[in-house]
Image (tube, rainbow, N blue to C red):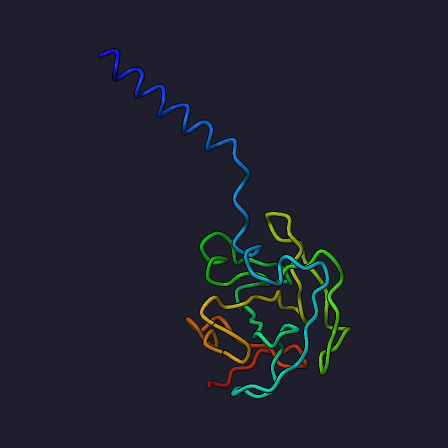
Length: 155
């Protein structure tokens, strides 16, 4: 009986120690662009036509359920659709319009880049520059054109 209490005590201490560890990073923070202070977007040619990408050519997407410029993708959604976060102002690269760039504060406190009225996201299924595998997913995720409108074309 005493051995059970000792074992239970050890398990309890181990779980309490785990609670005191460094907090888990947000899924959006795990994306390479999340760790850089300066974030830029540009327009790149793709199988969808000209679309908004990050500086390295990774496709950026909009979620049609985001309204009024506020990001509504959270929790499990962010695991698949990481937000493009930036601590500083976002810069417009080739083909992008600086006047359409802004930032919005997410529920957990990070600052997400927006283009037009759309907070910007990556798709975890896109493996590299030029991929557009997130296009049209569930009828609510779309690439963004240079003018800030959703691109509804299919690859």
